Amino acid sequence: MFKFIFALVLFVQFCISTAFAMPPIMPLNEVQKGMSGVAYTSIDPSGAIQTFNVKIVGTLPNSKAVQPLILAEASGDLINRTGGILQGMSGSPVYINGKLIGALSAGFKEMSPYSFLITPIENMLDIWKNPDSFNVNPYVQFEKNEEVKTDDTEDNDEDTEEFSDEEIILTDDVETTTENDEEVLTDDENKFGGIYSGFNSSSLKFLKTSLPEFNLKDYQIAAVGNTDTNLKYDVKISGGSPVGVAVVYGDFVLGATGTVTVTDNNKLLAFGHKFLHGGNVNFFMTEANVVGAVPGITGGAKIASIGSIIGRINQDREAGIGGVIGQFPSVVPISVTVNDENYNALIAYNESLIPKLGAAIAYSAIGKHLDTEGADGTAKVSFEIKTNAVDSGTLSRENMYYNVADVGQIAIGELLQALSLVCDNTITESDILGIDVKINFDPLRNTASLVKAEPLKKLVKPGEEVKLKVTLQPYRRKEFVMEVPYKIPITAKEGAFILDLHGGGLVPVIQAQQAGVVVPSTKSPQQAYNDKIKQLLTANKNNELIIKPAAVLKTEKELKAEINRVKKLSARLQKLGIKPSAATPGKISTDYIIDNVIQCTVNVDKL
Image (cartoon, rainbow, N blue to C red; front, side, top):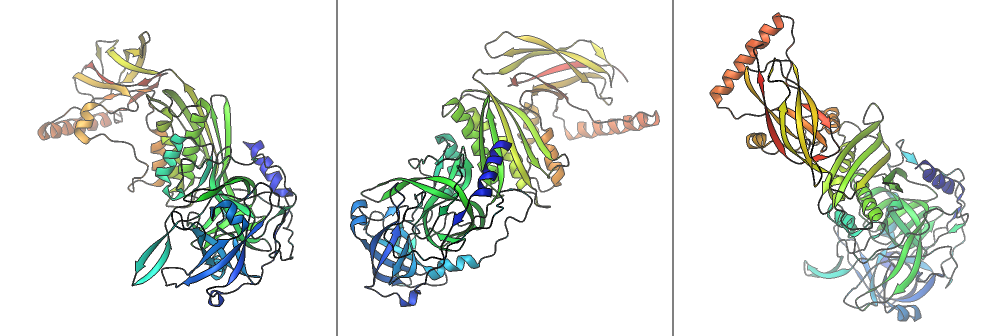
């Protein structure tokens, strides 16, 4: 993990970015129907910025709830080749008479492929006015030693310009609605397609359910660019350049791509519409590498991939995204080792995303290593979260899982729970400096059933330790016997003392009848934060054999009588200098997940 981080730090220390000064703008109130202009974009692997013609059809009125938009039509050789506006052109700057009026932000899928909407530049410039509160905490960060070099040369009227990398996948569909007798075009929510790499279809389903705002598409799998972060000493970027935004970077990638609208020295605006609409954010700004353009009957797309990191996206607003070239986000490194294969990624620090993304990365690593969508087998999972949420600086947990269809689906449960607990700290914000997950997968079904248990002594005293002879039957293997010690509570009543024996992941039947199946929760508002962490770390494990007094159903009268007996006995023991204590469950680790519950009776003598 540390070598991986070091390589990235080297990259950001030596990379020199070149941006361009803010061009003149034309405000919305000067934009008139019939005006002609030109838009800048990039659609092929050559890296050239190309142009197409734009004609203004009209402007759409705004209100407090709806931002103004400009309706336009595209034409020219480039548009004839692509068959219309493509996904990935979002953010392409539009100029009239050498002045920037705004960014292409949406196309008309299933309508006219040549018509599109423009987000006015005034609305986009407001993005830069928003506060930025990220990068103030001591997380692992990218740092840049050299100041960003800038170029004040305007570059808006050239038809082509060579760049080091290219462009991608992102645009909003539009639908017509009628409100207050006015026909208004509004963005159809979440119609952009997030791009991803490394995540298999199973983990993709998990992400689609837990993070629906990404609107991930099954067919939009984009291979990531060179994540070895080859050093880019001179990164040129200006209006029309492709750009990427990512929340996960490395062996796994999750993000989207579009087009730069404008730069002002090291500041950047792009997309012309939201990414996740996260407000003040902390995401990776990357280069984007165009693979090619694919025309489509109902809307084509530029197929592209995320490239090297070049800065930080710090604003994600309705009118577009904004960021700083040469400034880099706070990150959480995650390393996942499945058997002997290691995967590394960086998660852009965001408390609402870290738990789900961390779990999804671990889930995908299992499927990627096993080359299957659902693994039938046993997984032993251990993880360490480096965090100041615990005094030791490391939150560690280990457990064992089996599932007949997809063990990865349940194996990530406690990792998700632990990360959510750290990120949901209501007392103070907890730092996460790294996540290390180790998964040992065994294709065999390592489960076992308890056959029987019997005490080695016929009669025991209260407070005495008794050994139980326990027989286990592993799945399709020879049964074996193990001796398990258990200390009889000193308050145990004379006579038959019934014990429950079960796996750590199971609840005895009688207990379930009394109180329902109780699953330990880290979300209980009644518990202090430290208690929640302790509850998670000390929870029974699936491969542990648990022994504890059986929960016997009693009438109200019987229960009162038992309480009085224990009180009197406790008082007598205290006079004798013996401190009574509650019954402590016996617990022992095994190589198997115990899948059933049995009972054992011990005969208790008088105290």
